[in-house]
Image (cartoon, helix red, strand yellow):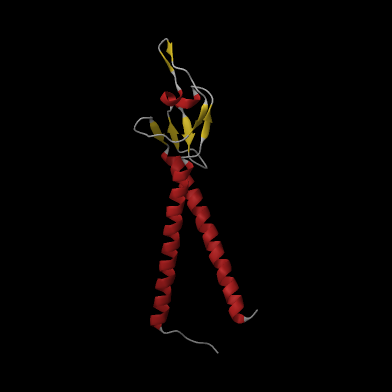
Length: 138
């Protein structure tokens, strides 16, 4: 026995499906941006004063570089401020010069967002297949 849907039911179904796709896209977009922002706070070890002047931040490809020489010490003229090696995190861009690499950021965003979107859509596809198989009794 087949059932036919009225045009109103079909259009509602299309709008619901379209709304679901937009919601999935928006949620994965926000999640990707949050993950990229969180990757800036990954601790890194600085062992030399030279390394403190160009610390890469961001995953999977560094998209932000920060100069933290004042945090770890540097040479000023003939006077030496002691260097103390240690781990660092993202510091205030107002006090520590920061350089954004936009192509790397957009590449990271596309990779992370695309991966999240693909995983989410695959999970939803599997759920749909399982529900369909359960309904038909296969």
